[in-house]
Image 1: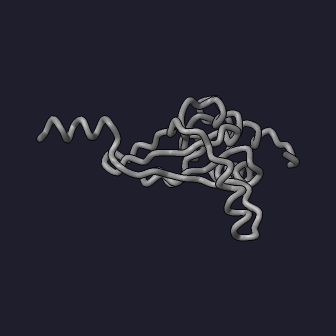
Image 2: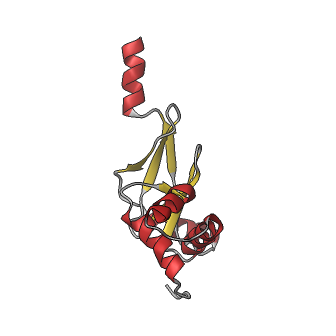
Length: 132
C-alpha cells in the first residue's frame, strides 16, 4: 500500500485488525475512545473508507449496522441470516478463478469480488424446528 501514514489512520486500522469479529464504524469509534483516543467519528469514517479503498480492509453491508469492516488479507465469503441478521464467514475457499473468468469474458480487469449468501442460520433453523 502506498498512502500517507497518520497516527489516527493507524489507530483505526489497528482497532479493526485487533477485533475478533466484523466491526462497524461506531464500534471502531467506541474501541478507540476506550483507549483514550481523541479521534472524532468523522475521522473514523473517513479513514475506514480510505483503508477500504486502498485494500487494507474489506467492507460488508450489514442490514442493521450499515457497513462492517474486516482485514482484507484473507479473502472469503459471508453468510447473512435473514432471521437474526447475523453475518458469518463462510468456510469455503475464495474462488480467484472467477476473477479471471469474468475478466476474460468481459474484457475487463477484475481486482476481486464479494459474495454474500442469504438464508437461515443453523441457530435460527433449530429454533424454528423446536417451535414446529
